[in-house]
Image (cartoon, rainbow, N blue to C red; front, side, top):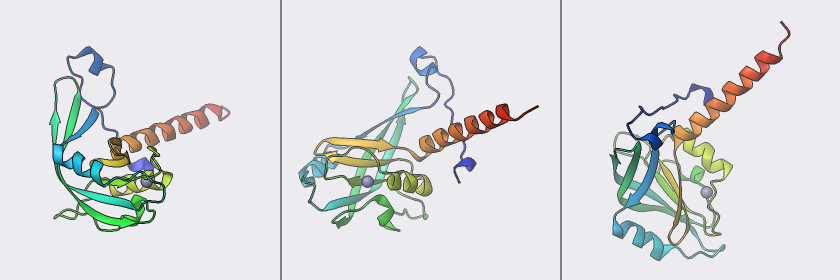
Length: 168
Ligand SMILES: [Zn+2]
């Protein structure tokens, strides 16, 4: 499944630091009210209900150094439940053309790592970005294209290794 991924490579820029980067580094920011609302509703207790938000509106702003900033303009709460991963979300976060919208879900135990189920779902949905809220003001972000690029590279090196081991 992971082999069909396109490897996205950023065009080289004039900035010497960006030239060392094989891909665009994305920062995620948001309107003040967006993150303030998330901070207010995050309770940070392992037993608290987890929440899931669909990002309805965002803008991507490239800059001159090979990085870009995703600016979240609005989001809506899609679901609250005892425990969940984004695999539970079904068709709750779908745009008007049927496209997958980015999802932010909470980890109330403060764990900022995406679970394996989270990662598999991110790759399957192919939204432009996805996030975890793991504290009032702590977020981790992941990108389907980045996971696919890593998976491609792992597969490529496995094939290369197998080919080198084959007797002549
Ligand atoms: Zn999760």
